[in-house]
Amino acid sequence: MSQLDKNKYYSLEEFLDYVKEEERAELYEGAPVFMSPASYEHEGVVANLIVAFGNALKGKTCQVFGSNLQVIFPFKDDKKGNKDVTVLPDISVVCDKNKLRNKRCYGSPDLIIEVLSPSTARNDRLFKRNYYEKAGVKEYLIIDPHNKNIEKYVLHSNSYHLEEIFDLENQLFQSTLFPDIKFSIEDTFSFLD
Image (cartoon, rainbow, N blue to C red; front, top):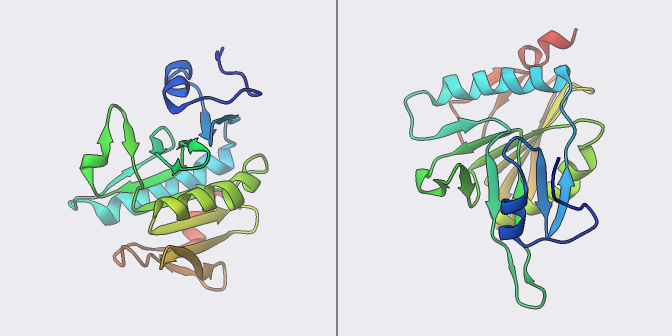
């Protein structure tokens, strides 16, 4: 059981000391956020996407990671002090291996994917989208298994722009950041039928 109190604020150092390795918890500007286990639908989409991204990036310098990679954004706020954020994205693509140390990623991955669940949709669409934009994540994908679509946000001038929505009518996904990454939306959600 965690020593973290959801009603208390923690520094990054305290959070990393208290959170257990097997625990699914994130830190949003000092506040711990506990995560429930994912559904099989969620995990099936994640697995399909890891295969698609992993195959496309094979032999390249970028690496694909699942949801156990802890990503730390060391945000500073002159008025409020440090407002560090620690997240566990469903999928991260990291091209700068210097960011990977002590079992974590320090700084922004190049691309992040979040698969929506009823319990995480608000955080993924609001808080995390804001954190990823602020941290400089170049491409952010929000996957909605219920509606079978992918929203692709691309960073332009430090701001996310919804570049495209892929669904059963607009079938062929292609990454802006990694143009070699292409896959069928139908394949991504195939096991849900």
